[in-house]
Image 1 (tube, rainbow, N blue to C red):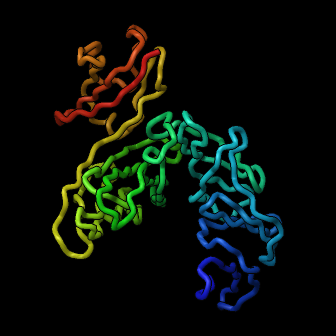
Image 2: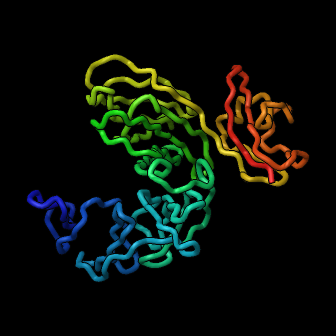
Length: 330
């Protein structure tokens, strides 16, 4: 990166003795997500935070203009912060298919390159909350990830509302999600809504848990830096601890889970492997609070006998805690 111009960078290649072999032309837009080298012809592809990609030849010179990466079938924008393998002819990639129209769903996808400008998704799933309406308060503004290299899990942290550090009278939530290599949700947690939060960093740990760092804006406009430790099963080991002095915070936390398919005609399944381990009962309520179904926990239940409408799905844990989510019966 040019220290006199933070809007440009160069890519260089060195030998094992630290001698420069090749250096690229100046490249604008410095937020580089990663580099993939094609093992057959030694060309490179550079992936940037704005979903663009630039191709370099084996001498690191630009040979192709910017492409903006889209999914092959849906043409959705594809944000690609994670590379399963960086030096491979056809590497496995992981990222987000962004909602581009009102009513679209946000999808987490595993993919392979189809060309310089498209990706072919091998597998993708409806993620987090199903269909969302795009507006200023209901969108993924900021998200970070980190790889657990020991059990091949991925950790994501994201926000659906942007509260800038130092801006008062803004209250936001943020979410932390753990996925396995097939993008199945292992657990998801929701934090905050008592202040303004901005995610700073997500770190995967050797024990397959993670640490999440956030900036928290107080009502007086001052900013505190906090971190939270979460174990491999989604339990908050230490609530939010200050990085720069101050006291430990008990920031509100809520377990989030996905029901699919939603809406449904017949069967409804839970997608949260952590909750499955200690779930005890399932209760379904109508919008008036009347119990319409109650049974011992099963991952998939039959709701074909319910009338059309909106219902509350409640999962009760062995500990006595319970968690709710909505679903629609067609």
